Image (cartoon, rainbow over all chains, first blue to last red):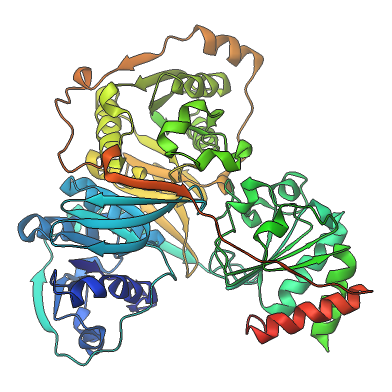
Length: 318
Length: 261
């Protein structure tokens, strides 16, 4: 088994550690050897974490030309090595980068690809995988006999227990040369400072048409600010022009899975539920006691959204 | 600029209902209202903007009904449409679909830019654009929220954790776009008439020179089960005379659970 590591701000990402955590039961049962594979430049500087992650072997594929960690190039390096070594599972985090690399590795090796994995188990000749689809509304169980590429859903698996082993390092030179690079980072624009990003925020406050007016919708933003949360909206609100579509939660908007999701004046159409129902705790605030949103909510307040939000904001201010 | 847009017909996400997952999704798909994958219209809009006066082709891999999606794209502004259909592609996985798609694009090309929607609303893997790029040997950028073509250079804006990454990409290339990139135009009356008259180019696997699909591909038999997730949730409703009392009770519960400070 290979885990392809992703770097974030120059360090191995949490999502990478979660992938190792997902694979560790298979490793513990000694069904497969687990290797961490890293592609990039100056990889030895990460040396201190290799053993702690419990991976007996870390493969480093290095070249100074790989500074951008462009997914297409990383995938080629990984796939070409896999062609010789034949790992049975190649796993990556289900992030923007990990998904791109995984897709290309699968295409290059003619391996089946299973994305958004929330469960993985292996016996000697069979891999069983659980994945989500339809915006988290459906769970499919898939079994495969042989090689596959998988991406692991974020925040489902814990990081592996800290280990204290000496990882064997295998250092390889990348085959990529400058001429192969057809895509480079021109610049990185900083994110706008308007609160945390919807996708990654652990707390999200969302408003629907039940808020009544764009003026009242400002209470959603205000509560979000008080809680350091991101704010979202239903499709109806986006279509009415109260807020831009980057805040839309739902099957045709963003699919989110925070620890806490507070839905205000959102009735809970399936389209919207598909975008947030995997949240850990859902709070519904709605005037209509029969609104479907209450069926997925752990906590509910039946009442006027504007009054309730005004109270929440005021009481949090104390 | 010669552009092709890859599209997919999906079960209508606006008409979701609880009954739809009772059986194997693949089987119930036929009896469900279908639509063009919403973000594919943003892909077409970008194509029409970049192409200028040049024709834009749309292509899909899918069953007979997928023609409806192609005709919709023709009515919006695409010039020609290609439909890849083969019994061996029923229930096709990502690998098989991309093999068929890339073969058709090679046959119809060369294209300067290949544009896809970021992901479908059904399976939602968001993988085909990158797989397609790999099979065609091209660079790609996924999840683009803005694309600029300046002095023969293409810049793709991809949102990431650290900010908006602006990639400079050589042509030809593959792009996938999100809903935020533009507002798709609507079908015109003239377009609808044209859409009905345009002949859709058909390919099966043999005519694309594909003799067999890879052994390792996922087949419907690999899916052991597929079911709607049901969570048993007991909802605690906070009662009280006033909003003040209810709000206080909610905040107390959220604090007890450590969900808020």
